[in-house]
Image 1 (tube, rainbow, N blue to C red):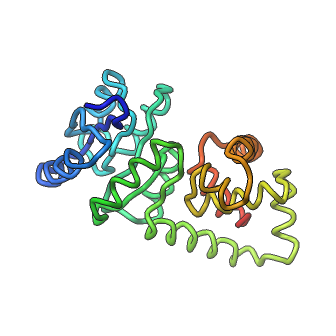
Image 2: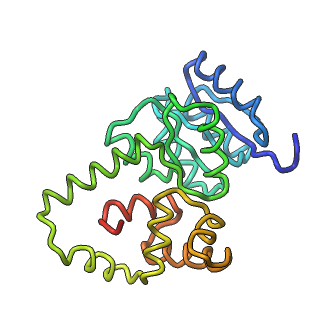
Length: 224
């Protein structure tokens, strides 16, 4: 294992899916599969013991489900990113997983390349939402806003309630689009240090811990 490899823990109860996913991970450059778990509790225990960089977490797990396992791992303050890997795409599961602290959400129908990209992205601190999930979140937000009879001042009110500057709004929109700090810097013609500073300020103003939560908050509050 190279020193730069991303250490991954796979938590999946279905044997064939676990074996197939493990094969994909073992072939991926820059990624090392360090362990596999068959239930949520085992996933929590291995996470605390092995301290993986990224956990690939199913939701429908025995003993405790993936959402509760995610919550327990995040509550333990481990420096570990959690990428939800599931076939479930209903509103309740998606928002529950994100609320539990998940760093990303990818569907099991994703290609090996998409899965690898998602693991690398969340490891680097970039929010990753499967396109299908992003559409689901956005659709839910739009329905909520429509039921609230929005006015022309909603955007300004929401923005001002968080105290975001115009530049921070630009950066936030790019976070929602899934861009990393270097990509944001290139897009806005600013230094990486400046991009990082803007992201840090945004997280503080939105009262969230990571980029995924910032993206969800931005869509929920109508900031983007």
